[in-house]
Length: 255
Length: 355
Image 1 (cartoon, each protein chain N blue to C red):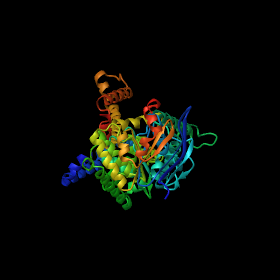
Image 2 (image 1 turned 90 degrees about the horizontal axis):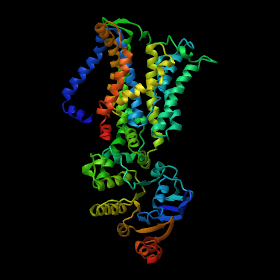
Image 3 (image 1 turned 180 degrees about the vertical axis):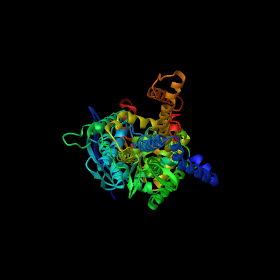
Image 4 (image 1 turned 60 degrees about the horizontal axis):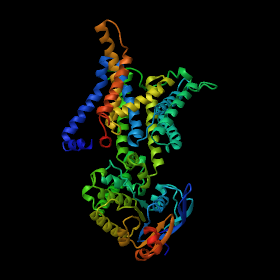
């Protein structure tokens, strides 16, 4: 079976800076795949190329065997990759429920006429959106807070709401940009359980994370970037022993 | 809004009684106004037209958060379409039920034509482009009299057909059921019905998948894109909807006035409609209507009170009503920004954003 996501030979320059050069990775179905590396290694660039926010200079993406069009973020979401943001970007003045309902947009279709005439189809769809969104809030443990405004939620809850909103787009791959950043130990533990559950329910996860403990404990496979190049890839235990990784993180003198 | 509504819902009798009273008041209103003077019925009709315009602009500015400073152009397009197809200008006299929707459609097309290349711009830049569009359209109206006379230039188009259904002519006075029903009163009822339809459309749009997408774009366009919303398309939809309402109102304006000229579609009119939206409460349908009614009626009230007042006090006119109007208007906007930045009757969301 071919991989869920295959990225081949991805390169991106910003002026004179080679942010990524020839990076290839493959994520299998049902995997949590970790992408780590020191600051400035190119993790976020990789993420933004994958989700259509930047244009790659070269490289190819295949999702579930089909060529992935990364020309615009909304197309990537429609193809089945949902993302979260390093700095939480919720719709602050909408309720938790409404945030997740927006996530259903891409899987639903009623337009202006459906809205104006409240056709039977539009009403049924609206009900389905509502139920699906509510179920997702329960799933991430925010069922009781569905009517609270996003910006009134505690930080950890906002992070989880962002994941629920991403899940609402019905993704094949959930791409998380440092989901544990700024979380305390309890919140990180809750997040970890949530990610394990998402994996168990069949959605693959791409995780960019600084919290090495979380990555090593959670991921099935890990790739390490440094200066825009992939310097190691494998199971967490292998990667941890790699000389190149130790050098990248701790500096040459110690290795 | 919805909370108050929910409270009322628990008292269906009270809600029903309130609605009946309101309906009765709205039905009786033109006759009451006519006893003061038919001019007041005309003023009310114009106020309703402006409410229609403000509701259309509210979709663009209030729902989707796009600043449009050339909105009056769509009003003008609707008005000219109606005028050209139902006046001696080309000797065409098509029925209103055909050209009114056509005007809305043409305005909608222009909305898309304006929006498609410009909606990648944000904030100030979009405002400048739309402002330019508004001026260009007006200048076209002004100059399309040569080499072929289409718009009749600055003289405008006169003797535009009123609405007619069979023998029932909206501009003619007649006695119905023992009541003197003048032309403006007939138009009042028609406008009222259209206003209610437009309100219903707005309420339903707001509370729909598309309405949520608009709100999401307003909140965070980047995140909305990442959630699979085709932001350009959804913004274009807001532009097209707003423009169609503008075109619809324009066609009615042409029929009611019987005369239009480019002067009715100047920048100040765009600013005025925008002020109605902002003053009333961006994003809240009821607030926007309130803003439109206030900014339409208060200047007229001033016109009728300031002059007699000055004459009786000083024996002569010292300050022109127009000057006082602009003074008060400026003062009102300043006080608003200080004390009620989200509008007189803000939408819940806007209130939260500004707090």
